Length: 117
Length: 118
Image (cartoon, rainbow over all chains, first blue to last red; front, side):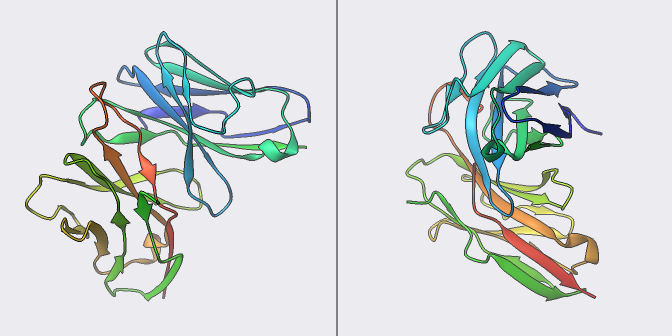
């Protein structure tokens, strides 16, 4: 069964509103989670690294104020897309690993398909 | 420079045949890990196989095997006896040991869309 759960799987929102996406590790604690964005038929692009109890680390070109990340507990990270615009429409997916070794499998959430209208 | 390169945007393979999906990587680290993931149309990412940079044997997992050629920096995925359910996007990814913090991010290639023909 899934070890990382992401919710919601699909969301449609109006332009200008904010959307929160949750990523939960179900049976392990994750001090670090990763948020990716995927455009249609494209690869996964890392947006940010979510660190429990501290600020997220954003990749170059990703707006911190646009994509708010909160990692308040060892099993939950949230991504909030603020003041969403149609260009924010995309597939967002999170991942977490049980361990910190190189060979630790990265478990992915089911992904969230965001459509901004 | 791209860290992970997948040169085949799309491939069509007859059912029951074997298929090789190419992946080359670029790193200056001595210690790194290579992963292959399958992404069906539903969007979920399914882990297939892992190869560590120090592993001497090629990794195998059922019908999946990884042809690891370290000197060439290639980690091709081989799927034997392909099935219709193998139709999906396939991503090669790498994790580098860049710091002491561990749990480093995965860097993905652009993917290969595999279509199995009945």
